Amino acid sequence: MDSAETHSQAAAALALARSRRAQSVAALAEIVRIRSLTGEEGAAQGRMVEILSSAGAAVTQAEPDVEAMFKAFPDVAQYPTHWQHDLILPYAGLPTFEALRDSGLQPVLNYDGRPNVVGTWRGTGGGRSLILNAHIDTVTVEPLAQWTRDPFGAEITDGLMYGRGTSDMKGGLMAALLAMRYLSEAGTRLHGDVTLHCVVNEEHAGNGTLDLVTRGAAADAAVVLEPTSNTIAYSHPGGLYWQVTLSGVQRSPGARWNGGTLEGLGAVDMLPPVIEALLGLERRYNQGTPAGAKPPFSLTMGKIAGGHYETVTAGEVVIKGGAYFAPSLGAVTDIMDGFRDAIAGANAADERLRRHPARLEFLHHDDSTDQPADLPVARVMGEVLARRGGDGTAYPGHFCCDMRHLVNQGGIPSIIFGPGSIAQAHKPDEHIPIDDFLAAIEHLIAFIAEWCGTER
Image (cartoon, rainbow, N blue to C red):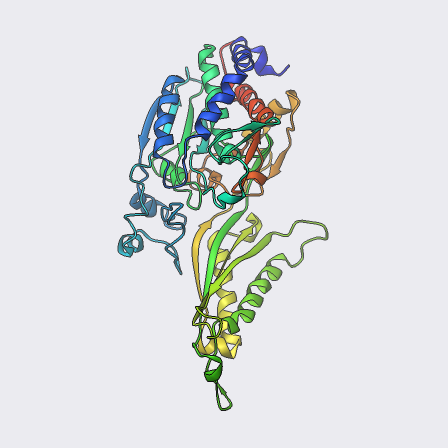
């Protein structure tokens, strides 16, 4: 039995959670059934206000202030995104509030009706404070035809709940909220304050959490409730989305050559040197990686689109992709400079690209986060998990998330911990194991009591 369970108040909360497992599953199902795609979070946030209030939290809500974020954190602030208007404002340098204002896209790229919701349970004093951070928004359900279940049905089959956001990350959100509900209803008197962040626009932006940091969010530690199968992550990679645009000369087959002169140099013709430059960038970043070790840089080239007719050379082609990078490679702005150097080198080295230079732009960028594996919040969570039969080891994280803003901009020591698997994120038939979700509630009850302190 772990030390939190020897505290009668925490033990009562754990007993309450065990007796209400069916109600906990129903609570998660209710939130999964509320559509909350990025840009359409309002209805779900309204319900979260009601649930948090009923759980004893003091609740506030406010729409993210885009101008304030760009002013406070110009290197990492992003444009608002919406699943129907996703990543539509590329930038060569960094995004700016002025560029957003001048783009004419503010009618669709904004936070009108999309508030962050924050619930706070005040402690009695003398304990460590804690932030529980989660996002309410989800990615699109497309390709809808590949789902075999209703993406908003919360159907349960063979111990798995199906639905968009079950793992990413309504499971973590509701596990934390229910942990606090059961602690509150059991009469647990926590010493430290606990604040739950239910943020918008984590997907492809991170502005929900950045807005709260801009407004002064602070605590002794934070738990970001992304899906880790109830294990601990103390770091995560950075990432960015990029695109390269190539322009060419449109000519039909009969007009491609003018005598011995190639006039119809199509944009597709110039893809090979650009692709090789990007692959070369990946090779350079990964040079020296020990055999069998995971390389620090991972490049994806996910989409190529262009041309308008099969028998005409392409006037334009756009290649889009992404990249993840380990904290050891530097800041995200350093990685962006690496991309710029690679494309500039290709333009200089290839005669075709000297005539029609490739244009690099970015669509989104995330910084990485690196902390010691034995930071106090990871150590306490690890001890709680180990005593409860879980995995108490702290691991490097494998995906980008809002922890970057809590740590890098907010100076708050943080870990990632939550039910479900990141392998389920953003895919058809997303699901979460019910047992994973229920275990997370109890793990969080024990951890919160241990971290914040309780009356015995």
